[in-house]
Length: 145
Image (tube, one colour):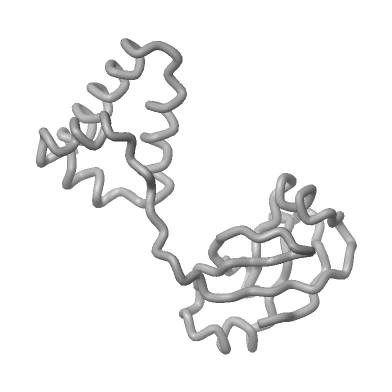
Protein backbone atom coordinates (compact mmCIF):
# COMPACT_ATOMS: atom_id res chain seq x y z
CA UNK A 1 0.00 0.00 0.00
CA UNK A 2 1.45 3.37 -1.03
CA UNK A 3 0.94 6.88 0.35
CA UNK A 4 2.68 10.26 0.34
CA UNK A 5 4.04 11.83 3.49
CA UNK A 6 6.43 14.52 4.66
CA UNK A 7 9.56 13.69 6.65
CA UNK A 8 8.73 15.43 9.91
CA UNK A 9 11.07 17.18 12.35
CA UNK A 10 11.72 15.67 15.80
CA UNK A 11 8.85 16.91 17.94
CA UNK A 12 8.97 14.55 19.80
CA UNK A 13 9.61 11.92 17.12
CA UNK A 14 10.98 12.28 13.60
CA UNK A 15 8.95 10.23 11.23
CA UNK A 16 6.29 9.78 8.60
CA UNK A 17 2.59 10.25 9.28
CA UNK A 18 0.49 7.34 8.04
CA UNK A 19 -3.06 8.21 6.95
CA UNK A 20 -5.70 6.45 9.11
CA UNK A 21 -7.26 4.86 6.03
CA UNK A 22 -3.92 3.17 5.22
CA UNK A 23 -3.70 1.72 8.74
CA UNK A 24 -7.28 0.47 8.47
CA UNK A 25 -6.71 -1.06 5.03
CA UNK A 26 -3.69 -3.01 6.33
CA UNK A 27 -6.08 -4.86 8.69
CA UNK A 28 -3.32 -5.44 11.22
CA UNK A 29 -4.77 -3.58 14.19
CA UNK A 30 -4.00 -0.09 15.46
CA UNK A 31 -0.23 -0.64 15.73
CA UNK A 32 0.61 -3.15 12.98
CA UNK A 33 4.10 -4.48 12.37
CA UNK A 34 4.99 -3.46 8.82
CA UNK A 35 7.73 -3.59 6.21
CA UNK A 36 8.41 -0.03 5.07
CA UNK A 37 10.05 0.83 1.74
CA UNK A 38 11.28 4.36 1.11
CA UNK A 39 13.36 5.17 -1.99
CA UNK A 40 14.30 1.50 -2.36
CA UNK A 41 15.41 1.13 1.28
CA UNK A 42 13.32 -1.28 3.41
CA UNK A 43 13.09 -2.04 7.11
CA UNK A 44 10.69 -3.67 9.55
CA UNK A 45 8.97 -1.60 12.24
CA UNK A 46 5.68 -1.04 13.98
CA UNK A 47 3.34 1.86 13.25
CA UNK A 48 3.17 3.97 16.41
CA UNK A 49 0.38 6.13 17.74
CA UNK A 50 1.49 9.51 19.07
CA UNK A 51 -0.86 12.33 19.98
CA UNK A 52 -3.65 10.62 18.06
CA UNK A 53 -1.59 10.29 14.86
CA UNK A 54 -0.19 7.15 13.26
CA UNK A 55 3.56 7.48 12.70
CA UNK A 56 6.43 5.46 11.33
CA UNK A 57 9.66 6.29 13.15
CA UNK A 58 12.45 7.37 10.83
CA UNK A 59 15.89 7.03 12.40
CA UNK A 60 18.97 8.88 11.22
CA UNK A 61 20.31 5.63 9.75
CA UNK A 62 17.09 4.96 7.80
CA UNK A 63 16.94 8.59 6.60
CA UNK A 64 20.52 8.32 5.34
CA UNK A 65 19.95 4.92 3.70
CA UNK A 66 16.81 6.22 1.95
CA UNK A 67 18.45 9.53 1.03
CA UNK A 68 15.77 11.72 2.61
CA UNK A 69 15.83 14.75 4.90
CA UNK A 70 13.39 16.63 7.14
CA UNK A 71 10.84 18.45 5.01
CA UNK A 72 11.07 16.09 2.01
CA UNK A 73 7.82 14.90 0.44
CA UNK A 74 8.20 11.16 -0.08
CA UNK A 75 6.28 8.19 -1.40
CA UNK A 76 6.12 5.42 1.18
CA UNK A 77 5.18 1.80 0.68
CA UNK A 78 4.00 -0.29 3.63
CA UNK A 79 2.91 -3.91 3.88
CA UNK A 80 2.05 -6.08 6.85
CA UNK A 81 5.19 -7.88 8.00
CA UNK A 82 4.81 -11.47 6.84
CA UNK A 83 7.67 -12.95 8.84
CA UNK A 84 7.26 -13.42 12.58
CA UNK A 85 9.72 -11.28 14.49
CA UNK A 86 12.20 -13.16 16.63
CA UNK A 87 15.60 -12.80 18.23
CA UNK A 88 18.48 -15.06 17.19
CA UNK A 89 19.74 -16.51 20.48
CA UNK A 90 23.43 -17.50 20.37
CA UNK A 91 23.96 -21.24 20.84
CA UNK A 92 25.87 -20.91 24.12
CA UNK A 93 23.18 -18.66 25.63
CA UNK A 94 20.41 -20.99 24.37
CA UNK A 95 22.14 -23.98 25.97
CA UNK A 96 22.41 -22.12 29.28
CA UNK A 97 18.74 -21.10 29.12
CA UNK A 98 17.68 -24.66 28.28
CA UNK A 99 19.64 -25.91 31.30
CA UNK A 100 17.57 -23.69 33.61
CA UNK A 101 13.84 -23.98 32.81
CA UNK A 102 12.91 -21.01 35.02
CA UNK A 103 15.36 -18.79 33.13
CA UNK A 104 14.08 -20.03 29.77
CA UNK A 105 10.47 -19.35 30.78
CA UNK A 106 11.36 -15.86 32.03
CA UNK A 107 13.29 -15.13 28.81
CA UNK A 108 10.31 -16.20 26.68
CA UNK A 109 8.07 -13.77 28.61
CA UNK A 110 10.34 -10.80 27.80
CA UNK A 111 9.52 -8.37 25.02
CA UNK A 112 11.56 -8.68 21.84
CA UNK A 113 13.55 -5.57 22.69
CA UNK A 114 14.38 -6.97 26.15
CA UNK A 115 15.47 -10.26 24.56
CA UNK A 116 17.61 -8.34 22.03
CA UNK A 117 19.25 -6.40 24.86
CA UNK A 118 20.32 -9.62 26.63
CA UNK A 119 21.77 -10.93 23.36
CA UNK A 120 23.54 -7.60 22.63
CA UNK A 121 25.22 -7.57 26.03
CA UNK A 122 26.43 -11.14 25.58
CA UNK A 123 27.64 -10.64 22.03
CA UNK A 124 29.48 -7.42 22.93
CA UNK A 125 31.92 -9.38 25.11
CA UNK A 126 35.41 -9.45 23.62
CA UNK A 127 36.86 -12.27 25.71
CA UNK A 128 35.36 -15.77 26.04
CA UNK A 129 35.50 -15.57 29.85
CA UNK A 130 33.59 -12.26 29.79
CA UNK A 131 30.98 -13.79 27.52
CA UNK A 132 30.61 -16.79 29.83
CA UNK A 133 30.28 -14.50 32.86
CA UNK A 134 27.60 -12.46 31.11
CA UNK A 135 25.64 -15.58 30.20
CA UNK A 136 25.84 -16.81 33.80
CA UNK A 137 24.66 -13.41 35.07
CA UNK A 138 21.76 -13.27 32.58
CA UNK A 139 20.59 -16.77 33.49
CA UNK A 140 20.77 -15.92 37.21
CA UNK A 141 18.80 -12.69 36.71
CA UNK A 142 16.18 -14.44 34.59
CA UNK A 143 15.87 -17.30 37.10
CA UNK A 144 15.09 -14.79 39.85
CA UNK A 145 12.08 -13.36 37.94
